[in-house]
Length: 163
Image 1 (spheres, rainbow, N blue to C red):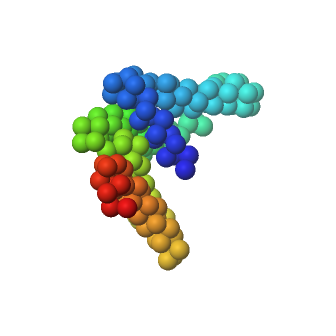
Image 2: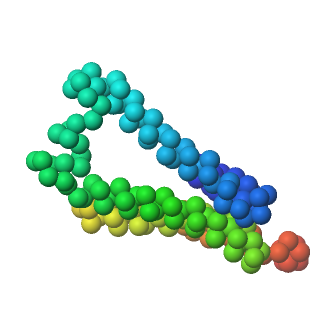
């Protein structure tokens, strides 16, 4: 529900700014600022009192046994790239949904399909298996979004004639 409200607010804000991505910069700022403040807090109040330094190579996730350890670097790089692609995708989906006359909030809600991708990712990464309740829940989420999308795409007058 919260994600749908977020999509609705983002879509309306972008419509007011004529599909300008500048409305998403406050979102980016928060996504950068919160982790930065968290790490600054940890460095100042946890790491520095214990080691006398704000950063040390021995406690870094990027160094393992004195050598640079690449997997965390690639993970952070991939996360950064997806953080850049998300607002671009939102801007494009909002623009094209307005072009075809569908509510941008409904189009953005199709990202509920990410629950399937998360399930597949966790299966291959951690061997987690889904039971029937989980699969039915995901299907119900996607089904409800499709129903809302179909109802939003039917013009009001056409809907009144069928009643």
